[in-house]
Structure formats: structure tokens, C-alpha cells
Length: 195
Image 1: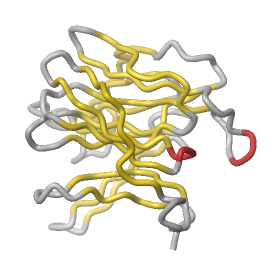
Image 2: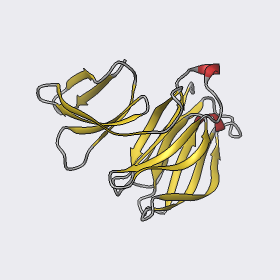
Image 3: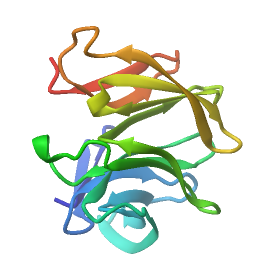
Image 4: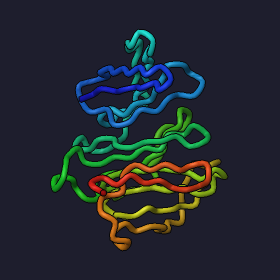
């Protein structure tokens, strides 16, 4: 609990370090700042300086705290092409104890802080954007869908919800979870509990 891990394929070196006493829900490298990462710790968006050579946390600073109830926690996160962090929350529970609609979806920028994007989220998960920055895809796992939005990269806003894939209607087992996009524009969605 509270550990982050890094594996370097070229050297086959694996390292881990504990950042705090609870679950670390995401880790995103900071462009242009060697050994700096933004991590999710409970409701805190935290900047850490992790010296990878010595495997030591040099510094740690909370950038912002999402204004969710204390029963929630951060879940998945990803940066857009402008470096804006998109992150969502869910109840800090498992299985039947997860409260439907209790989470939120935010964006975060150092100069603008947190901005609420969506309410009534249950399990905030997969995030992806198109290479032309015009489309934004998002997964709220218990909806069993991949949703598409129009994306205004300049304003950091999403609008015009459209469901583009329904896991249940296509009779695919599992909950849609993390998501990424390849260089050909294909979405890849992990399925929790899937085949």
C-alpha cells in the first residue's frame, strides 16, 4: 500500500518506494523535470521528486486537494497534450460498498487549479484524447460504456456526450477500466474481470 514501482526494460531494473500509508492511485511523469512525478494520494494531487538512481524520495509537495467528501479517493488520471492533468474520484470502497454517483471528474492545471468537469461519476477510469485534440474519451466503469466528448483543448473543456461503445450490449465480460490510444487512433480498453 502506498508504493509506486518503476521498471526499466533496457536495464531490467525494477525499483519500488513507499510514498505514504494509503494507496497511490496514479503516477504521471512531469515533462522537462527529471525524476519528478505527480501522484494521487487519497484526495491529494502530489508532486514528488523521486531520485531514481538512489531510489529515494527527495521532496514531496501537495499541489491541490480535490473537494470531494472524505469517503472518496482519487482513481485514474492522465495528462492531455498541453500538460493539463485529468483525474477522477470514486468512493474509497470495493464491490457492493461503492456508492453510485458519488465521484467526480476534474482537470488540473498549475495556473488554473482544479476545474470540475463531470458530476455523478461512480468509478472514474480510462481517459484518452485524439491526436488532433478534438475528441476526448472517458470511462465511468459501472456505466459499461466508452463515452466520447468534443474536446476544446484551449479552454480545457469537454462537451456533447456520445456513447461510442457499450460493453454489455456487445456481450463482453468485465468492467471497462483503464484506456489508452495508439498512434493509429485505436482505443484500447482494459476490462476488469474480463476474459
